[in-house]
Length: 308
Image (cartoon, rainbow, N blue to C red):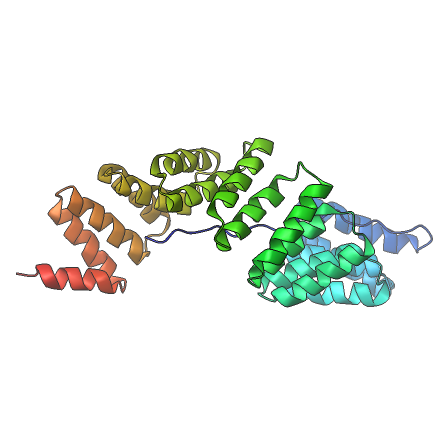
């Protein structure tokens, strides 16, 4: 059963920029309306308002920037990048546009472009810890864990209360092979935010790798109390429970995974293995058959070996 590390989350500057006085009142009205609509989650209406502002003032950098934010929130990542780029051509001092374009590029897998953009934001203002945190995440995406750790450390130096930077540094250290350093960082993140479900989950994963299955189960329990939809935590808690011989608990957890991911072949295979350990041959066979129907080759082999 694979141990899954949940990806770290970027901190995005979502504060919408206002406009300077002196523009036509109608342009300002549209931008303010877009900000209000976006704040209430009405993304389409926000985009429409910013587009109307741009029809009246095509050189308004903040209207492009805000429309980029709205497009990003609506899932149009490529459109957001286009708008951030237009904003920066008009006003290269919009450091938030560099940061958010970097976030958008990372979301599309362009981690190199993300590092370049966030580095530009840092060059404009090297005192914002979230920028270093974001660049660290982009560097992790490139496999540059040493550079990522350095960025997270700088973010922590600027803001020792930034729980996300500790969590993300823990992920980078784990990927770099420093398991104990990762556990220490997750613990530091949790000291700053006890409701940080990802940190509980990530520490649980690290504890599993270190062989502390009971500690891992306790951490997965906390993560699931905070976020019952964290399906990976059910999956990995099942692994830890099975390692301790609690196959009944493993079956319960894998059933929770299947309730969310009914077409996950690995989940049926894992539940089948746990049922087999409990002596439930009929239930195990049923799960192996379902997993085989979904394309799991191990289940096909088991069924062939047990066929009369």
